[in-house]
Structures are given as structure tokens and as C-alpha cells.
Image (cartoon, rainbow, N blue to C red; front, side, top):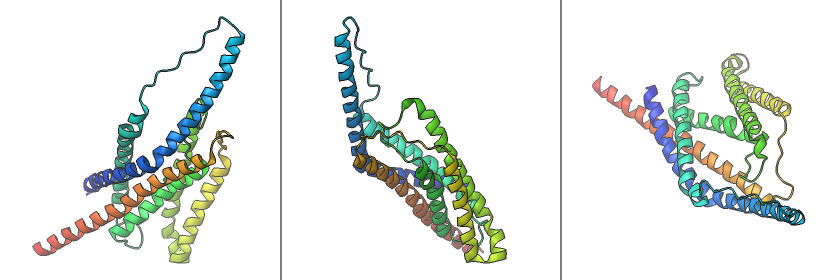
Length: 260
């Protein structure tokens, strides 16, 4: 059963990857091109200033341009496609494993479609939305290359704490329901999660390396593209995985009933 959910999640991840790739190719890549154009403009301006300095100091050689390892068309085409598909397939497999663990264990006896939608919503909030409120996605030209490891580590720390807070808060629901009822239990679970992530967000350091002259519209559109791609992936996982699982279980029950 677990293997079936894993494989199904990975297959649904392929569909999610194709949809996310299409969205990023149409809407996201133009924002990356604009960000790269801004970076190129800034580098040319800096190079111009250095050239003036070299003219004032004869005998010094200008630094050679670094060769481009992967061309921009390859990055925006095949590179983006492979990265998005691998990413979505990986998350699809993890989603299938999470569904296998949660199925039959969550109070309320949710149907497969409802459980799948609930897990997708929780995953989107805990893994992407909340961490990106603290450390939002930035275009390639934004950020100091020397701080990329620190920024990446902080981002993954925020994801880990957010996900742990989501799982921990949800595990308390059974205790809350027995004492305060279903509605109040849901409110208390949400409150526990919000308190943990807000405190974490306040304690973690702020990272703001966006240049003052960077176009605000490009930054906004890039972050919308990132949000849209993630939303497409999680919605596809939640709805398509749930529909396929619901249908498979219905067919299995009908077959068992027929044999009985």
C-alpha cells in the first residue's frame, strides 16, 4: 500500500511538474531575463568605472570575462524543465508517503480526496508560504554570493521549524477535541502553529540584500511567479492524487464486495 501511494505521488508529481514548468516558462522566465539584464547593466557600469581607474594607472591589465558554463537558452529551457520535474516528482513521492502515514490516523475519518486536499494545503502553508514570508524568493541578481550558504541555511531552518510546528500542532488536535470540541480544537491548533512560526520569524535574523535601485516590479513579478508555481504544484498534488486514490479505493472495494 505504501509503495502504491509513493508511485502514485511521483506520477502525479510529473503532471504537476509539467504544469509548473509551463507557468514558469511563460511568466517566470521573463522576470529572470529582466533581473539578469539589470545585473548586466550594473556590472557594465562597474566595469566602466574600473576602466577609468586603469586608464589613470597605466600598465595594469583588465580582468578577463569569465566563460559562460551554461547558456541562457539552456537554463530557461532544458535546465528549467529538468529542475522542475525532479523537484515536483520528489515532492510528489514525499506527499504519497505522508498520505500513507496520515490515512486512517487523522480524527474524523476523512475521505481520501478530503485528506489529500488537507495535506496539500498544510504542505503549501508550512513548506512554502510561511518560510517565504520570512525569506522571500529573489531573482538571480539579488543577494551577495558570499552569503548564499548562510541564507540557504536560514531558509531551511525556517522550513524545518514551520513543518515541525505544523505536525506538532496537528498532533494536539485529538487532545483538544476531547476537551474543547471540534471547532475550538481547530482554532487552538491554528493558534499554536501561528505562535511558533511568529516567534521563530522574530528570532531568526533578517536578510535583505535587494539593491535599492532594483526594479520593484521585477522583484514583485518574480515572487508572484515563484508563488504561482508552488501553488500549481500543491493544488495538483492535492486534487489529482486525491481523485486517483479515491477512485482506486472505490474499485478495490467493489472488487472485494464482488468476491465476497
